[in-house]
Amino acid sequence: MEAKGRTALYIYSLLFILTVNCELIHIPSLVYHGTEGKSLLLHVETHFQLDEAEIQGTWCHTRPSGTRSTLVTFTKDATITDMMYRNHLFFKEPNISLLIQKLNQDDEGDYHLNLNIEFHNKTGLVIKEERTVRVTVDVPVSTPVIEKNPSYAVVEDKANITWMCAVERGTRVGFQWLRSNMLLGPADRYHFSQDNSTLLISPVKKEDMGTYHCVASNPVSQGRYSRAMDLSVYYGPYNLAVNSEQGLRTGEVFTINPGELVFFDCQADSNPPNSFVWISKSRNGTRVITEGPRLEVRSYRLAQAEEYLCRAFNNVTQKQDEAQFTLVVASLGTGKEKHTQEGSSVSPLAAITVCSLFIIACMLLVFFRRACHPKRVLMSIYNRPLSEQKRPHLSAGHEDATEDFGIYEFVSIPGKMESAQASCRSLARLESVQDMHTTIYDVIRHVPETPSHSLLK
Image (cartoon, rainbow, N blue to C red):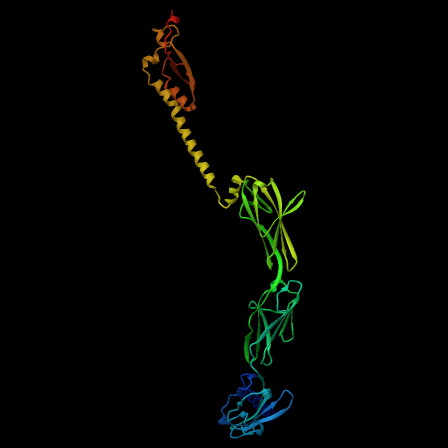
């Protein structure tokens, strides 16, 4: 039973020590970047009350070469500083932090803190704390200087370019390269040195043109930019094309009206600018028409169709390109207007035509209704006196044949079947009209201007 109690007490004591140990001291950063000639504070935070415990500790320095030195030995009430560092270090008890004044390159390395803590209420229980801090000392970076080799413009696909960047002051300097404010990284044609101070572009392309900067930095200096330097590259010709503001274009065929004066422009992406030659092609061969980026053509001097060619040549890159097209002389007429107005759903000409046809149709309808109305003929018959309607028409019983003498003409008046049938029903009561047909006739009498009495005799 007594052994179990001792074991439990030991476990509780160990847990207490671990808990207190995790909370006693804290160093915000385990790496400090110092600037040469300036001071650096190795700050230590304590998570216990110094007046409740006794402390004893040391600060030691291990250089990159491996040499180890004890800098300060301290308690809560006293401090012993190595005489070699008395004017270089500042340590004031009971604070545990260490201040290094006027940093130099010899101050680089690892700083070790060893601390023993004994609380007043835990006499005989000593807690040991150890921490290690890495310190670097750097010189601020000066403005970088950029150079290129060769310094003149280069030819695409035939030359390489080497960029170099250097600084007068600075330690542990890192370099970056920017083209038109875009960061450059390793690629098939981009080759960097180990510290990125040199950039080789092999071979040079058109897309490498731009403004270049070199950026230098280190742990104690933000990026310092060099002056801007441009890279010029001779290239081309690329994207050769022939254009014209006149006529109608379909693919590589231009159609123009007879007698029209047309201008053609030949354009290509190139550095330096290209020289242009215009060539006319025929069955018999080719001939040079003119030189320069513009061609003037008078259509009345052409046959129905003729082939042309624009040739662009770069005198520096020794590259050339050609663009061929066909010129056709034909009357475009409304065809051209149709193409130029293809974006609209209804053309103005079509709207005018429809309106005109509608007006003509209305006028014809009114004219026919007024000139050939069957109801007017029927009403003229229906409105005759009843005595005239009942009187039969006899071929030999006229009272005065001379009154009926003349030339008679039967005219057929077209009308709807329903109107004719309705008129027949209204005239059914007439005794003299027994077999009236649906076709109605109007009798028109033409009296001769001079009656011939000799014929009567």
